[in-house]
Image 1 (cartoon, rainbow, N blue to C red):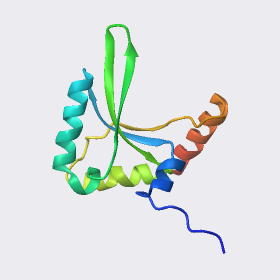
Image 2: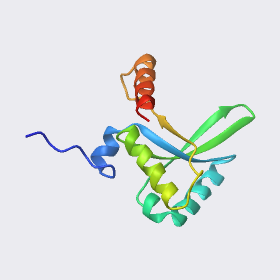
Image 3: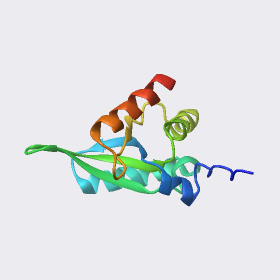
Image 4: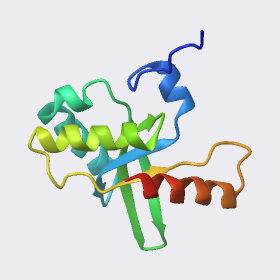
Length: 121
């Protein structure tokens, strides 16, 4: 009998995943941390057990900080968080779902996997 796949919130799922939901964009890392704390307080059922990842994006003078939660084991798991946030009144607070590369994958194979996941939605 095959083992059951890890659930969305389990440590095994997080270790296996590479999908992140971006829920905010801020101009400074400090503002990004503050935004996550505020959202976590407002949506404790959805974000209470989640880890934040602050990703610096942009270049030169156009730098911003993406507030992301994850990782999720699959694109569908990330979408589930988005839907849960919408149901709780957080419509429009998330920006995107990003696939982060796993070690050993080429850019082409990452792109193909992302294209296939988008076709599902």
